[in-house]
Length: 222
Image (tube, rainbow, N blue to C red; front, side):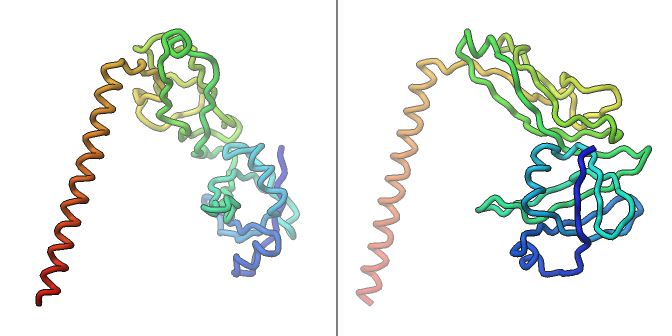
């Protein structure tokens, strides 16, 4: 099992922790007291990339004799630099189901795209599942070869999950489909609509300019 090391965190200055090469984290779970932790900012990103949000990890906290089974429940990022700001860890107990979000990985080739020139539309990239920790998949593979025609769809209920794994959501919700290519008439109509919209903006801008000029002239007369 993949191991994750952490230190207990008493310092509440998260900026200082990040400057020192750490990532602020918190450990919580059912009927346990929250524990503030610090993770290694160099080691954790690589581990998270490999483990994802559904792999059960062995967490060793400095000062504790044993290890805890945890999953990475949530990761917050800095919006500009993309660096990790904070991590939520959830301690799982034996016999307890957990709810996690896992990615969909699209593979294969659609005949409706290759032969008929259609456009693949992916409506969902992540799904929420619930299962015992030992049954949690790292990802779910979606084979788009099933989309042979424009009438074919892949729904949540079509996703290949193992027994014991529950997918949250409407089974009829469309995950992926192929849309037919636009006809020449549709493209021309779209171009005309864009031209009309641009013209409307020009007219509106000119009208606002006239209003401002009139208001300015009125103010000068006064």
